Length: 61
Length: 249
Image (cartoon, rainbow over all chains, first blue to last red; front, side, top):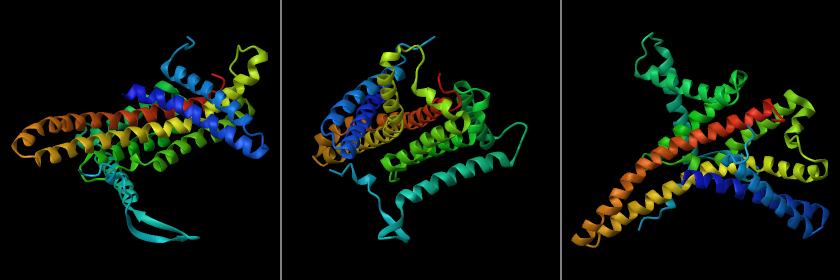
């Protein structure tokens, strides 16, 4: 359970931060909804990268 | 059945004053934070008071916790990481003690509130950011530029790395908070089954043995989680601080 929670929190954190960034970006530049879409996708990518890093996938020797 | 959320309620003990219209109160959460600090102070002061060559129990507990954090720090940052020892040791001892106090029945768990863990995680995050820039200057931003990446996808990777960096305090704090919250709710729900089953008469009381055994087992598990989460928080702090000292991997 500890490992699962750790990895899922990494993924969720990436998505949440990406989404918040996109929302703020839209609010400031009134580009709704494009900032949200783009940054949410980037957030997903960052989340997957976080998960891979903390799981130790593709670690450089 | 007993309300499993009730244990997380913040209760005001007395009011300290006002800032604007916001009341600043001394709550049960603050009281348990002071309790954690008091326990740590007693342990460390009592442990270092005797200075025996052959340590007594108090002293060996204090020495053990010192050695443990120092080894964790040295293995992930190296000898120069010892300059962060006061920060990392305080974080580890505070989280560990707060978690451990929370397991005692009728107590309050300060680390089961997101605001507390976010404050701790932001402290680490800002330390990494400010110290990283102070130490490395603009070279700190090499953290966001992994080498060996083709130039045409570099902008994309940089944005993703920045988001990944910003998401660190989120996962760092949510992990500790969620573990403590979930564990305490589970304990309370199973313990609630015991009382509601035993209210059903003899058959129910016999059946209540099952959740009772589960509660006992879960208490042991929670003890492990309390230590493990303090350790995980500490080791992640070390990994993040390592980035401040050596950006660019």
